[in-house]
Image (cartoon, rainbow, N blue to C red; front, side, top):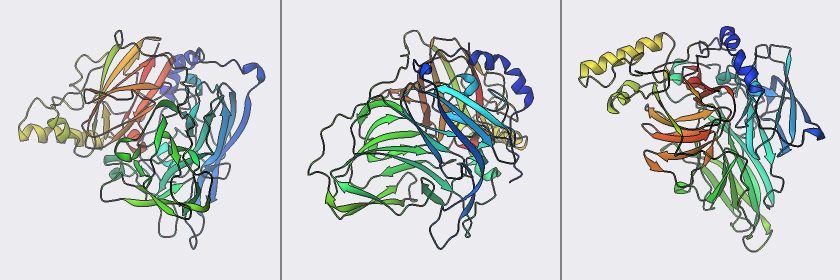
Length: 507
């Protein structure tokens, strides 16, 4: 295990969050199926071995749930109650976060904020209702930059009471690994270069834990393909090679069926997409799925290999729109507004200078331009810019690399950046004042993405993790109906661990 300097959360913050723990029990998101009893599951986090790379390479030592990467697929019906006992067979603390699931605060799996970490040899019981249908996933929130990077993740699928008609419902858990020539995981977690740049991007990409060769398909069949990006930092932009994917859900939440922009299904870390994929190739043909997100670094992900026989002669005309989940609609006319700026990282001072140095404002921060970045943007001279860079470098040496409104999370969960009035509508205007992409994740809530760079979004999609491009401004809106203290952070896990995380309170 690497001796990383990435921050962990302290007991002091856990004690301070006692109010959040008790508030979480008041979550009104409860199903009517409780009388029928909970679905029982057990997951054991442990060391194991997995066949990631094809022969002649051997197995790779991994961390995993129940001996497999990804962990067991948990599949339930909407409205069912889950009771999941997590055993810690590792030599260090862990937790499990149910990403995208609107759970009570005490079940959210954030160490020292919503629960004490699960110690080695101990267990913890998570219990919650599957209030939303959709594609979700689970992973640790304790030292996640290493625990996820070593293989601790799995899919959680909540089926609609009446799923749309397809021939096959398939899950692809996408991830990548940084491997040595011997197919061992490179033990360089938490290094400064990854933290300051784009995060830990691996050199081996897997589907469901293995480098794939081919996926068998048949002409005429319709597939519901659930895509989950479980990578630490890699952003995927999937090109299905002449097929026409139709997105029907994002981050588990239904969206108006539509073709992806530019034909690419783009997923930042932690994001999901459900797509309808009609197999329109000829029998016996072979089509390559490529990842084309990074210009100049395109590669073959997998081949779709058609059988010699067809399922049907033409594309089926079955409905593909998914029923909505029970999410409260935000009222933009009465919404309370909050502003957040993400900054830091390599070239961060330069980008802040270009964007005028606005740090954003939030409740309880009357002059947010004071603090780490000082008067960034007020002095346009080269001397002023160099001074700001020096200030940023000084903060990096002290442990902060990434910042939210000028504050880096350093070794503990901070006091809430702002408090959201419970059951009120809120708009959060977010600015990415950095040179890097950031998938920003809110815990406990889904939100509508209502604008990008001042332009209304076409589909006003519900998400829980929104990918922000460098220098981009995004507005999200939601009803803060889930009480407690919740994380907001970048899901490039090295960025989160190096400061780009904070807490907001719903009360």
